[in-house]
Amino acid sequence: MSVLLIAEHNNKEVRPFTLNAITAASQMDGDVHVLLIGNNCGDVAKSLSEMPAVKKVLHAEAAHYENYLAENFAPLAVKVSENYSHIVSSANTFGKNLMPRIAAHLDISQVSDITKVISADTFIRPIYAGNAFATVKSTDTKKCITIRPTSFEPCETSGGSAPIEKIEATEEFTLSKFIKREEVKSDRPELGTARVVVSGGRGMQNGENFKLITDIADKLNAAIGASRAAVDAGYISNEHQVGQTGKVVVPDLYIAVGISGAIQHLAGMKESKIIVAINKDGEAPIFSVADYGLEADLFEALPQFLEELNKLNSIQK
Amino acid sequence: MKILVAVKRVIDYNVQVRVKEDGTGVVTDNVKMSSNPPDDNAIEEAVKIKEAGKATEIIAITVGEEKSQETVRKALAVGADRGILIKTEGIVEPLAVAKVLQKIVEKEKPDLVFMGKQAIDDDCNQTGQMLSALLNWPQATFASKIEIKDRTLEVTREIDEGLETIEVNLPAIVTCDLRLNEPRYASLPNIMKAKKKPIEVFIAADLGVDITPRVQQIKVEEPPKRKAGIKVASVAELVSKLKNEAKVI
Image 1 (cartoon, rainbow over the protein chains, first blue to last red):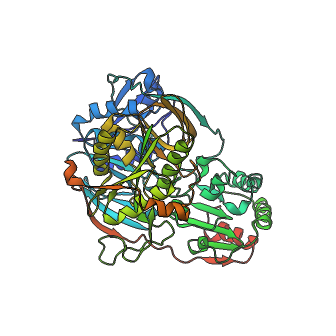
Image 2: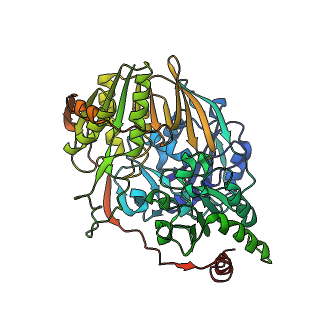
Image 3: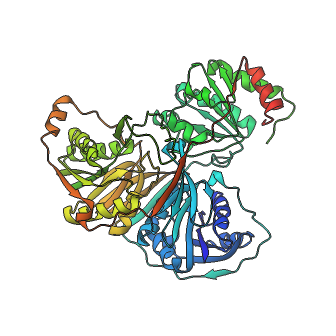
């Protein structure tokens, strides 16, 4: 039996977490087929077919596949699932929205957000905001799995030549309608895959002060993160939120500024390789996970930090 | 319009969860329990809709052990009209919860079902989507804004790229994000009144739903501990450490 991986894309390019999901899928079974559902997405089919870990691309096109409505995607995944032992996608908002709908149609108890594949039916997944890790074994004949992207390396993207098989679209689900997507365009690295993340919390006091974070992020070619408190307060938009109900990030360097370190925030960043905390409250819980803690007023520390970075001869990109 | 709101009793979000020494789960004895935070947003939204004159009845439902009644009571104190407790023992997986909810939806015929987007204990993020699939209803997940139109709902959803707006026909399932609203606290008189509101109790098996777990929990472990870090005295020292010791910049 083979693994069916559901690709996330924007009809032009494969979204990055699909690469991590392909790696995870290939650890369940070497025969990974990718299901590509979209509209005018031939370029995506081609790039998927060039990934060496992909053995076949199933490509369905229809106008109602232009956007990610789970109500349209799930029936097609269910229809093609027959010959597969596993159905896999990334545990980001794409896969979280879609996979349970597929699983319920197939009467499968889904395993969400796995961080490790032990065997074809046994996985490790974080629970309680990452304060515990459960080893779980699925007893369903078929498995529906979402994978935590940051726990798996992205797969190779060139050198393969998998066949692309066109498949029939399923009917449109007419009770739900896509209206619009407001994406914030940015030249910065994506938060989920950035090598460096600089995050601000409630300590930033307002949205304008995030300029201090932006300046440093520019210098380090970093993505910008935020605590839930900062997003709730309206300092910055929701796609920057790091934490249990936001994004999980595992950068080489995570700089937490004015973030106290609630359990829910730590859940999203504590696997980072190096953590820096800048906070004027020396007792803040963020210091308990920080490799380097600086107890200081961020409004003094951040301009100095920028100055020190400017003094360096070179900065890694 | 009738709104069904599903709520869950979980370990309070402020509690530092500890893993049991025998690896069978996490410590729950003498641990503070509360309602799942985004479920509070779900109740709040339903109450706001009723206050705006657009809903006539709110039913709060939970699936869990006897004590989960507390969570339903809390929803009643905030503004739900009546409650339902589906009694179960042990771990109930999201698929099983969705099947139980499906039975109640078929009986109560609500126009809307609200619940939190994920429970902060098992972090599964599945139940709402699964219920939508079983009913073949539209699903509006991770909702941060809801606007009720005639027989449709316009929902703004929080997604990785930013925000997405969809329109769903009623009946529909909505899973709520923490930013949907600001949940209110129950006043003392309302807590007293809630004690008189009815809670119907069912046994899951009586509904003809098989809730046997399909995923075996083999063991639960503590996450690897981070080694203790150091405090630096100045920004210059910090930058020097990052450059020369950690070699990350």
